[in-house]
Image (cartoon, rainbow, N blue to C red; front, side):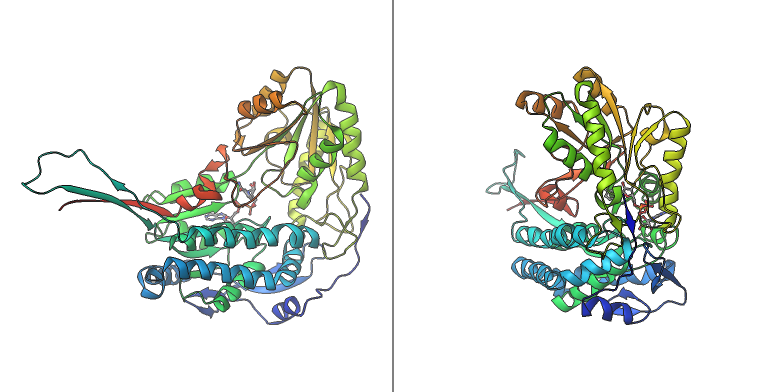
Length: 502
Ligand code: NAD
């Protein structure tokens, strides 16, 4: 894990112009709006300030929700034909695609991820969300229902049908690990359904969401349909989640904040989708192909420096290949060059902040003090506080905090097992249930293990594979509801039954 921190500048004129364009404002009712209070966002690799951001509170939340509520029934939005809504979503995708290099650079600067992770992975995935849900806009269907209601007036009959209607104003709240993608995963289905949105990005990483706001206006989105409020969770986040005119909250973030939101939603019984934390296991059976498993598991935990909700942080390896797997993962951890995400030589960037790197380090230090052994990594870097070395641990125990809590960093623990039942029990021994992977060449084992895992997604011979058509959600304390696919659209629609005598 060599760290080389070479100074980097954004190359695209778009990213340079956006950064040079001064303090960033809120998007409320189609206008960019200043606030008296501001806060800063920094490049985590260098600590250099990137921009001042508007700090929204209750007053701005009220304005943005009012704008979204007014746009909801306005003819230029509610009256837009499904075909036009589909075309609008497609246009947003095209404009984002035309600015993909610039958005990737901004994401790297603000979040730390490597340019490759953004440009090859997350930005195309965000674009794909808009294209996927563009296809759904013309296919939102109700049903006609033959009823058995008897005794109608002479010559009359009952006719009944359902309408699918937008749920209303949606507050979308996103985390810092994959900002643009998380925003797209909420905006695309919400707009497809005809909802209006107030979007609050994470305070650490707001830049690409703000740039997306500019691009959506360019694409022709009517004013007030999407409003963007930057600021802190306990301020503007709380103002939105407690707001009586917000019908639904679509949240991605930690389980801890998810629990707060359940309380905040009580007032008007807001609908909630909660995409929360994870502690995902990877089970490596004795017949696994290690040439797939080693790089696949390494990508599944070290990718985006482990700041991925589904990161495979607990590996259970059959005893016959445990040592080979540990050696393979350790070799990969030791090989990965760390550096500024814009540096083409870097394969891993920093964590989102020095505080996050310190938090990751504290888990490892505590685990080692309790008997865990370090096979690779296990250190931060004095000269670059937001970096943490990709780390492989052995001899951990299930009760250790690092085995129970989400670390959200590049740290994996490998534990041997003898029987598949033992691996299943260990893997499921967690409050979380977001995802799991199984590595095997046996079709029967693959299906049996997939059924036994208590998780929203099970991968076989891969980890962290996503696509807009694959529903994604958490079991147990990993959340409520699903994003992606037809189920993802359901979150933003409600059913109205119309029953008439005709
Ligand atoms: P976080 O929960 O700290 O913050 C997420 C968002 O919630 C931020 O925008 C924050 O400002 C806001 N927030 C904080 N307190 C709030 C409050 N009281 N009211 C309203 N909003 C509030 O999460 P994070 O640290 O930004 O992101 C990391 C977490 O996100 C991890 O737990 C990770 O697993 C999770 N995550 C889950 C998924 C998934 O799909 N399940 C995807 C990505 C990240």
